[in-house]
Amino acid sequence: MALRRYIQAVTPRTGYLFGDLTKGGRPATLEETVLLAGRQPNGVPRGLVRCARCGEWRGRCLDPGPEFAGQVMDVHCRCANDNRCAACGDLLHERKLNANTYNEADGHVWHTPGFAGLGHVCAEAASQC
Image 1: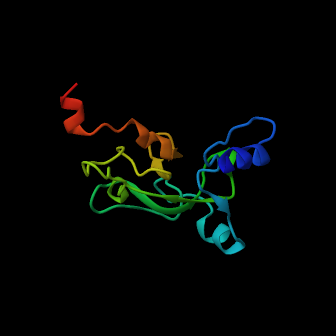
Image 2: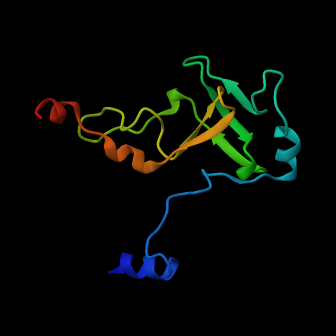
């Protein structure tokens, strides 16, 4: 009942809630704008470094897309994925949930929503199907 009242109070027109549509970003401070504006010589946003372990990009950058211009985004590599199933211990998804990754091929920061983990099926349970 409390959840129903909360949803009605927060979203009276739609009746349902969305996940974080901002990709977890926040407006950059003046200092961050100066520090992170632009791209590195290789075209990757400033503030990102290649992970020595998996080779993917990680760090903090300004979102390179126009929709989130001026927003600071935390970017995680594959190594940062610590979302594991309580039952079997396997990863819930190939990427960290509620986190961003940088795709060098298209130059965008992509968000993996938390609900992506709902598709996890424990290996033992899957083998019994």
